[in-house]
Amino acid sequence: MERIRNRVTVEFDRHIARVALSRPDKFNGLDLDMMYALVEAAKRVRKQTGIRAVILSGEGQAFCAGLDFASVTRRPGRLLAGFLPWLSKDNLFQRLCLAWRDLPVPVIAVTHGYCFGGGLQLALGCDFRFSEPGCVFSVMEIQWGLIPDMGAAVTLRALVPVDVAMELAMTGRKFDAEEALALNLVSRVAPEPLAAAEAFASTLAAQSPDAVRAAKRLFRDTRTGSERRALRRERWLQLKLLLGRNQREAMRAKMEKRDPDFR
Image 1 (cartoon, helix red, strand yellow):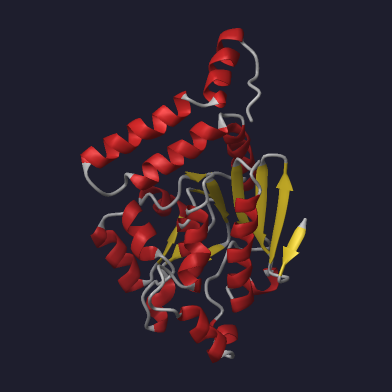
Image 2 (image 1 turned 60 degrees about the vertical axis):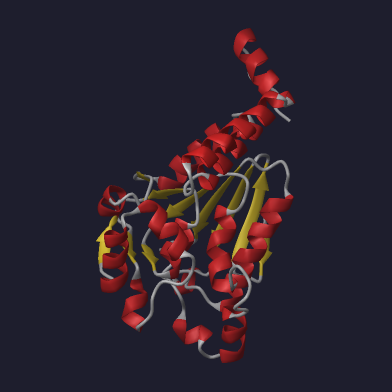
């Protein structure tokens, strides 16, 4: 297990990467060191070519209580540096959430305790969200006179209707896991969400890694745009799979009734 900036732990176990927010005394509140550590952790996961699934969780009593305002405002220079530059696609605050969406492999967030503000936006940047029943959620930035600015303009709009997104952002109200499930903000509610995520990650890791990556790319790339473009992307990704070794291995293993040996 590796610690990054004493804020995030990363562990690689065969085909699964486990990343954990590690600031439990502050309910994993996001200070600048944790933000940089999350971006760095995503880069390290990307470099591990054998990884087929990622589990992102939080240590202690909460997944993430959001931005640690008391900490980040003590260093206004670093805060401003993270907010800039204007001409890039994203800044530090957006990248720490969108870096997980942009990984080629599926990422599962496991939420418990609190999932507020930037913590919720971090979870929304993942492909799946497993939550314990007692987890409390909130798009909390309005309470500080702000709007959500860690990628919610991309991730939240993809999951809920615009009026729901505005209502959550304008009120900052708290809601439980069952409502989050009904709103499509979490994928599954389970008494032991980390165990459920482990089982799901193992299922994903047992599939053809080429096909799993292609499925993520297909549905991410075709979420917006024309039907013609979506169908063209679907055909192209399928052709690449048909020309690959892992697809042939999947067919052989299925016909021979054995476990596949994917590369």
